[in-house]
Length: 80
Image (tube, rainbow, N blue to C red):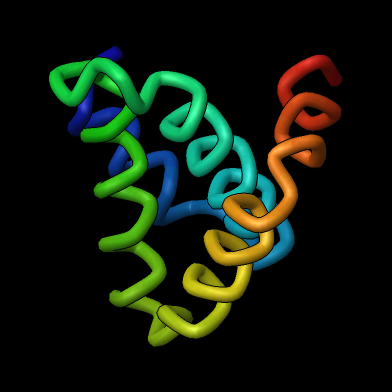
């Protein structure tokens, strides 16, 4: 995936859509944690940067914490 296109997509998202992206990319990143070079980690970084730009770091942190605490949620999200 082109990271510039991904960044531009993030900028156009409504807050509810951004929440979904945070959930999705946190889960994908956790799933691919054994490969630190995986592209998903870069994409998650871009999602975080967008949250910072919008002053929504707390939202990101809360979602990240929730996903780490209950990995079963990720299995459900990724399967959907």
